[in-house]
Image (cartoon, rainbow, N blue to C red; front, side, top):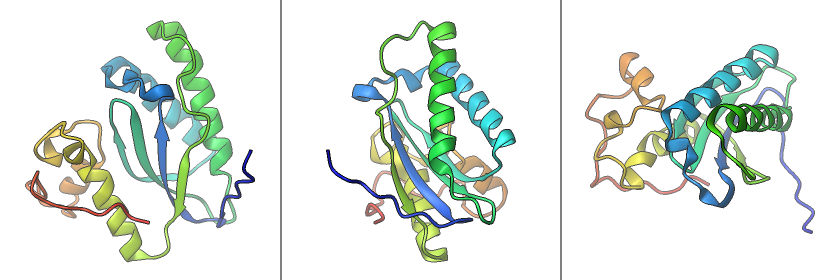
Length: 167
């Protein structure tokens, strides 16, 4: 097995991609997303962090988290989220087998430009995957919060926009 080392920055901002096992689209269920959202709020109340951006698609999610000063334990947070969500989803939704890929991908945000590129990527993702024609048409996304705050226009982006995957 490869020796994978994560780059951690206490108090840093991180971009994550978390994928369901075998890309099963169980996150397309409204009730499953509700359970996941409740678990994420619960873990955030126990282990504070700020959710800067989020989008949930049928078989994966992207999140941007800002951790408190001196804290770099995003692994523990994701472990708790996956573990608790799995238990609750099995009970409430009848889901069986493994629900999550064992690992996740993360990237430390380097600066404001990097943050903006990753926010754009998160919010454009449902369009990229062909689920909707505009980010405003996708419900489980922080895009709507950013529109309300005046950061994005409601008609921002569409199917003809090209975004590179941020590194």
